[in-house]
Structure formats: structure tokens, C-alpha cells
Image (cartoon, rainbow, N blue to C red; front, side):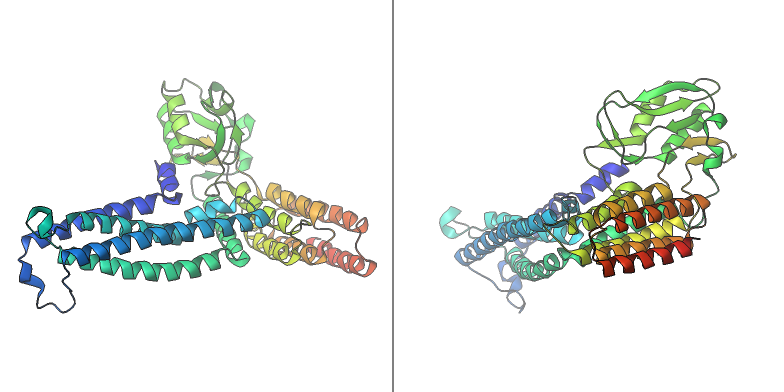
Length: 434
């Protein structure tokens, strides 16, 4: 249910649908109020203007037509600008545009204004229509307020979309996504039910009683650990996930192993499938690797010959350093979850800091060795990690990657002066790691 709610909130239709429904209801309510009040009830109200039936129809028609035209034109231009931006910095950025609350609310206000005007327009009657003239004064003036609001929203939207396609804004959103998933999976203080990797090895687990396979293909978007914990407690067993958020599975591939000294409940497989959500695309909400890949992808694309923007790549590496240094300075992501009695119940192979750091440094070695600006930012990222990393495995892996980077720089096409400067910088980083 939670993943379905998140999908709805991140879609482009949810807020427009809600605001349009509210607009229709408010229009019907105001029309009812107008019908209940006498015709001269608004004569002494200076803020309300009474119009004839013809004037009201012309006004409402103008509002509905102009709002719908502005909506179509504005969002067409926006999609064109977004297509140009994503071609340079990655197609995954379209998801950020769709899930942006500002864009959703702007579209919602426009569609709500259009539908409100149509509903009120339908209620306007002149004497030539059915002999009983009716002009809903309150509702028509409400349309005027919505028109003013639409103009204000249009001005906001122009500013917002111009700001949202800037590289700094895109990187801030990706950095926030990475920070949020780091706090979710690797909080500063581990919970009392978290179990470290030293106690989740195969030798510590009960025998396998059943294997739950995927009933559809797709990416794992979310693993509901709390639900799996309740399932394991009910059967006095253990649920071992074979996959994690971000993994792609095909129909029939194993997703979870049900382990127990006895037997699992009959509905164990159904409960597991409900707890492991599969979708057609990856999302950064629980996928730590994908959150890192988004910033890495931006840096790599910025270094491509078609873009040739090393400063964008450098700022992307700086944003990565913020999240990866935070992750490396904390205890390993706990793969196990225990119940209140301390019995291990759930095991999920979450990615560890070493794996993610290695992916980023491999990308640096492959794409950034000929760009001194980006390479300097990548070494700054490594130095941040070296200052906070306490685990010997992390420091050893980073040291090996930096040495491999040193060899790649020595074979690169950099000018001698730039190459010597980078090599000195690499030596400083190795000293920090030592």
C-alpha cells in the first residue's frame, strides 16, 4: 500500500485529479448557495460584481479557453526544454520533473480552473433559454479569483521551471535522494533489532524449507522488512531475501528463501510477494545503489565529448562525496533484523559502502582521467571518505582503487604538467589513507 501511495504522489495525475474534484464540488456548492439566496443579496457587497447572463458566459468562456491554452502551450515548451536537459545529463531526470510538487500543483490549478469555469458556465441561464434567468454571482466571482490565481501560478511556474532545469538544482535533488536513502538504510545509530553481517552468514541460518519465486519480471522497488519480520515471527522461522532493492528479476527466479527448523505457514509465499514490490523501473527511495548511480551518470555524461562539461562532473563528484562519506563513516548497513527476543528473523543483502565506492571510482578511472578538473574533484571525494572511514575493508579498497587510478593517469594523454600535478595529489590521498 505504501509503494502504491508513493507512486500516486510521484505521478503527474494525482494532484490535478484531486484539485479538479475539489473545484467541481466547490462550483456546485457555490451554485447551490446562489440559488438559495435572493437576487439582490449581493448588491451591497462591493467586492462582488454582478454580471448579466451574456457577460457571465463570455467571462467564463474566456477563462476556460485561456487557461486550457496556456496549460497546453506551457507544458509543451517545458517538455521540450526537459528533453534537451535529459539528453545531456541523463533520461532518469524525467522522474524528478514528474514527481516535482510544484509542477504537479501548477497543472492542478490550471485544470481545476478550467473545470470550475465549465461547471459554472453550465449553470448560467438567460430569459431566452427557459424563461427564468439565473446568474450565479458567487460562483462567477469565484472564477475570477481562480483566473487571478492562475496568472500568479503561471508566473511562479516560469520561474520554477527555469530554476529546476539548472544543473545545480538537479544535483541538489539527486544529492537529497542519496542522503535520504543513506539515512534510511544506514542511520547514525543502529536500532536494537538490527543484526550485523557477522551474525548473518549461512552457517548461522536454519535450513531452507521453501523458495519463493517471482511471479512477474521487473525491478525490486521496495522490500518491506517489517512485514517480512511479522511473517517470520508467525512461523517461528527466518526470511532470507535473495534480492534487494534495485535488482532485476525474471519470472520464476528466486526472490526469498524461507528458512525454519519446522515448517512455514501455508500463506508464506503470498505474504512474501506482497512484501517485495516489483516494478518496471528503479526508484531511489530504498535503492542506495541507484541513488549513487544517478549522480555518477550525470558526471559521466558531463565528461562525454558531446557535452564536455568537466565542471558539472566536478560538482557531481562533490555531491557524491557528501553521501558516500556519510555512509563510509557509519557502521555497515545491517543486513539482519531480529525480533523483540533477539532472534534473527530477516536477512536482506543491502549494498555496503565498499561496493558503492568501488563503482564510483571505476567510473572515475574510465572516464575522468583526461579531465583534470573532474579528476581533482574525484580525488577530493576519495579524501573525504579516507578521513571518516574506520573499517579496514573500506580503506583497503579505496587504497587499491586510488593506486589503479594512479596507473591510469600515468598512461593518460594529459600534458606533463597536469599529469605531474594529479600524481602529486594522488600521493597526498594515499598518505591520508595510510
